[in-house]
Length: 230
Image 1 (tube, rainbow, N blue to C red):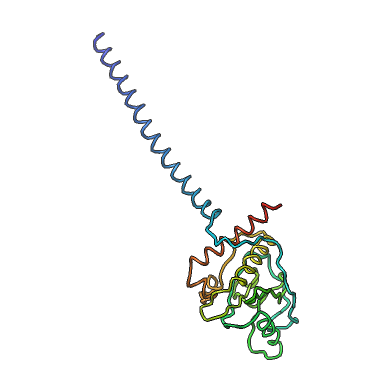
Image 2: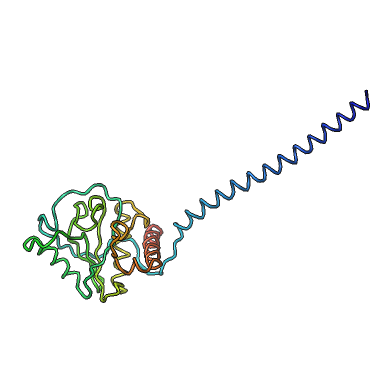
């Protein structure tokens, strides 16, 4: 009887040791799975926080803006109050060589020509000048289904490539960053007209996805630069 009891005791000890080993293995596997998930989430958020950028030196302070509001009319400034702003939409004029003033005056002329319904809150010129056409608390006819909750920025460009000049780009980054701060947004809330309708607008940022990501990185960096200066 004693021998049998000893055998049973030894057997139970062996099972106990085996169970401990199994628990350690399973515990290690579970830990690795959790660690992988956590690192994955962190890498996604870190990727957003640490976007690449071109290094353009601007912050999110309010840029110089030439306010030339359009007359209220049904073709370019309907005077309708916007919903809470949830995004900034970037456009290009698709009219190479035209100036910010040219585009602003075209919007104004629609009240008489009745040619179409179109406008933008801001136009950034080839030399970096910024003209405001519509108050940010009113909708502009620029971004189709997102007119009601976005601010639109139209950008001039010198040629058919749609690429902006350095001056235009610098002003665009600062204006966008300032608007993001103004409305409590981040670079992830900055979109292209293309992202709303599929239209190739702004052309350069649609055809060069890397340039678009760098632009958003510059907006992020501009916001962070302003925060660091406070």
